[in-house]
Image (tube, rainbow, N blue to C red; front, top):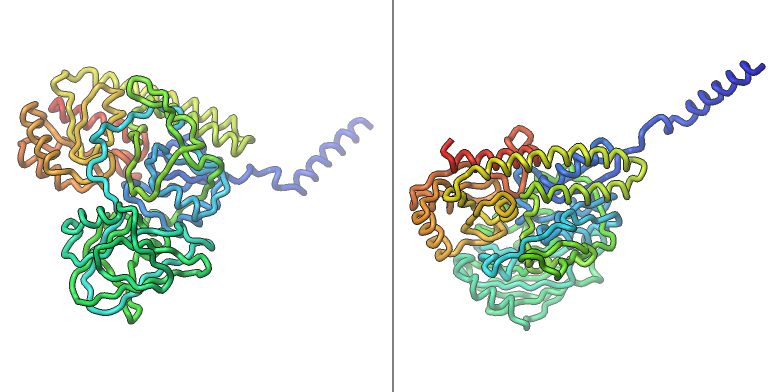
Length: 486
């Protein structure tokens, strides 16, 4: 009798298992978004098969000049967790989150890191405008439109300057003066704009799905348009405005260049949210010139400031030591979002931290062997401050922290003199920058191109920096080889 009862119990268990097949399958992976490729790799190492990861700015992409699209907003709106670097690296993130109506958990991955403050000259070439374009126009009327995204405009208003000019540089100083002025001429739906010395304040009509402005060109020629920030509404098609026949009018030159938009990377985007971490604040208690990047609830992002990173260097991932803090924040967030897999996340963290610490020790030993006279490195833009501090090197760059920064003639001349006087052997180019300036420096100094470094993005899967660990090994080996001649 006992045997029959026992068998009936087993049979009942089998029936229950068959009738509830979902119990036999693991829970679906949670949708997660990371803002750029390096951070995406770190998230993948912790989340593994338990997450469905999408990365906004993919391999070889430049987050400094990245322009979100309405498609990105849709992808972000579906995510359960959004991982950002913080330290104002993603100057576009707040507008993207607002446009997406994100409802998940937003995580600042640099929380707790001692951020390196910029020097007084840390912002080279910052602009009062985020976008400028030159158009060759016939006399006539053109139409510029802004459409709502998910029922709202990303911004209530924006400033714009129109000048008759042959190029951006020729009108830049005057345009910035106008954009920075407190006053401006307000314009609303269906108002007319003309080229003149004023900054228009374009106000979007919340009662309409699309706000239109007319641009009246009285004389054929070249005109340059400066916008205070890149309007989110027209980035989907990347068309500025249309002529009287409804045909798109494209710029003959623009800054930043359209080739940096990286829109091909958006095909496989995943999803994400913004809880109360709308702004991330840096602790005022400084320690030896550093500030601990702590309470991310109050992180301040001014999207209207273009790509100015603010007071701190955002490239914290360039120190392997800092990566442990990144991983702590990532692990805690994933465990909170998916408690049933928390033990797996912590196990993955433990294994990956061991690899990171081994790599950190390896790089430290290599760089320690370099003679002090051979520890100055010239790179395209100033992205290696944390690498320099951690591994005892000096990095110089003609550009500032952002790839959108422009090197002044004075800065370049000073750098050329330094290379000659210190007999610096090599300069390094980067995958995300225009390297013509570095090639000019090489010609004028006799230094050689020491190799290509990966600063803000990983390489593709077949490249030498397809993962964070590979990137750091590649960079350190490239630097060591060029400085030692090996």
